[in-house]
Amino acid sequence: MKAERLTIPDLILIEPARFGDDRGFFSEVWSRRTLAAHGITADFVQDNHSLSRQKGVVRGLHFQRPPTAQAKLVRVVRGSILDVAVDIREGSPTYGQHVACELSSANWQQLWIPAGFAHGFVTLEEDTEVLYKVDAYYDRETDAGIAWNDPALGIDWPVKDPILSDKDSKAPRLADIPPPFPKGSW
Image (cartoon, rainbow, N blue to C red; front, top):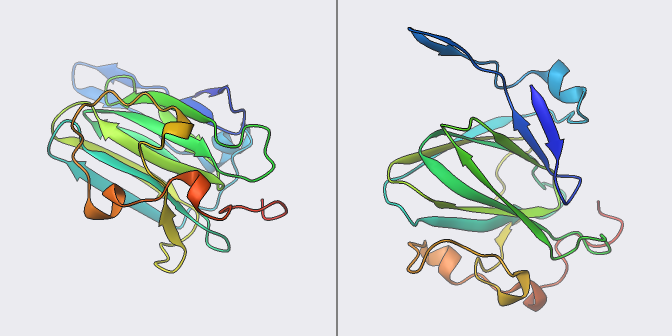
């Protein structure tokens, strides 16, 4: 398994090995021991699976505030996405900055996103399926989001007319909410 720290070093791009032959392939996509060797020690409690039927579906930017903040390990099992993580930890040297990675069933990469980041993606193909592990259960009370197209974030989304949920279309800009992860909470 390869692991690469990105421009925001808390984000890690992971590429599990695939062993294939004429029957197909085998891949160990998650191993507590292997990921711990790369500094990922999350105790995952839930797996989430989303299907987006259309190209251009934007989901996010989502997060849960403390005390139920979630870290995520995101991968694509069919199709492809541009996956985006935004640092929303007040006082972080990379606060308000983001990383965007293409994750696909072809490149087999995964993105580790620790708590303290807003997360979202846009589908680059029809019938795209995304799986992600989280280390905290969903909590409606702490569930929140920021605008996917907040100009201050400078995210270059490859979509002209995104398909959005009502919730995502009404999300506030980062500057218009209290710091979701104030100093000392992360």
